[in-house]
Length: 217
Image 1 (tube, rainbow, N blue to C red):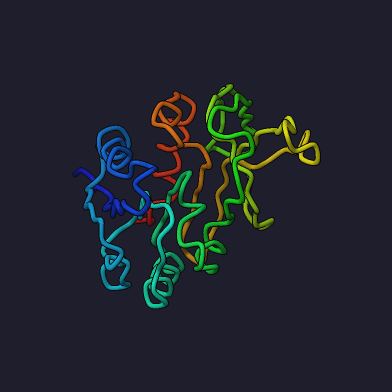
Image 2: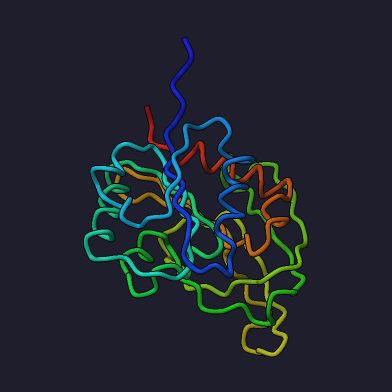
């Protein structure tokens, strides 16, 4: 007897500059083909009774603001076992909602040098999510983030300090995971353009993260 497919809420919207519909289609067509997916563009989906119907939340959202109830229901749903996998703009989503950043594990500060910086991505080989993944070089935005030291860092990058001497040589987390109550949360800073997420190492990482984060049977 086949196991039932995991249920995913694919929530997308917010700032159109990050092309949420394009990335939602990528998620549906390249990441979530073996999941039972429901899509929504409405933050009112962040109700605890609705979220309890799902095993996993994939929010593709930048900027915006949560109501106090939406924020509380989201944090409680994850604490009760809902998994969450997010990337790129989610670290700059809901900037006024600090508890959301506490759960996510980090907050966007800036991307020094703009969106055409060439930099390395190093996997730490410290977890099954990154086991055997090949380091690579990417040309994209390079996120500078504030990181919760309680997360488990899975991959890092390094700044060359161009224009900002004080960050020369700084190693910055670029992917991590954490537990939040009974729930599991994963974040990857990459994803400014679609081709970056389609890199074989990142596709593998995201697929592993989805399986890891989804609510256990």
